[in-house]
Length: 311
Image 1 (cartoon, rainbow, N blue to C red):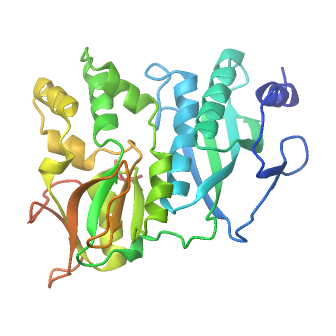
Image 2 (cartoon, rainbow, N blue to C red):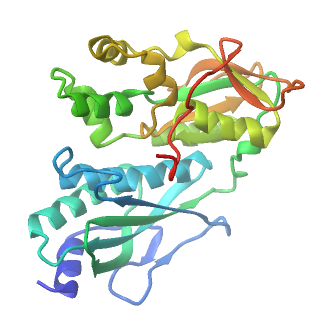
Image 3 (cartoon, helix red, strand yellow):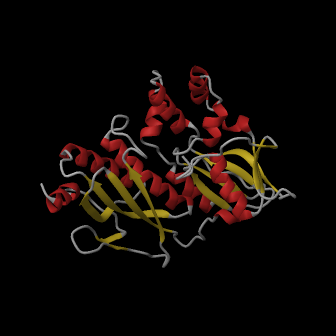
């Protein structure tokens, strides 16, 4: 169809929120910034590295591309206001694939409370999605990784380990785990929980993209604290069921599995947790060994999560 015909097809009939002053069709979009600060993040998905078309539908892939960026925006305590999408694909890509990607991206963008305001389409050897997300802090201070303090409660909103379990089920051919596979194909970050955490005075927050221990490790390092996790607090019967079938340790999936895009935050001691949040641990003062994440008071042996170029 050609670049401009495909872009017109992707945007046809799509609506925008009040935050979008100028959407697709001009050289650039215009998004309102009532707070006078803009939260910005970007992330990529590359075929064969981050997704497989024999495991996920184009709609699933589109949803995941937006979700992983939206989760980063809300983890800062901001409300998403718009997304810019760069799509690279082979020249013989079927229109049904492009339609599926667009439908998935728009579905997740609207679920987060925003829309797609522009982007670019180029020919490339393989399918590549790059998303830049924007957010508004609405007058609140950004939630940084450096805000955790000794005595804070560590809490989670969303699921842990299910995406990793779903990928393990796909890799092994295990049947009967459609819910876990769906969690891997199209994660659903708890967007509203992030805003409620910010409004409730959370001291630090991150989305769980690389693994709970890995992402808590970033908070521990930035805050100069020790974070201790209670493994019983993160149990998931479905993840444990799959682990038994595959004869693997469920804690590896629960504590180091990424891409659930759950949210983990710290809250001042004694404060009530907002709806949707459950306690999983405590922030402690740092000792001679320096900042760390421990599990039931002991160091974790083995990997802590995903790292690009690490495998």
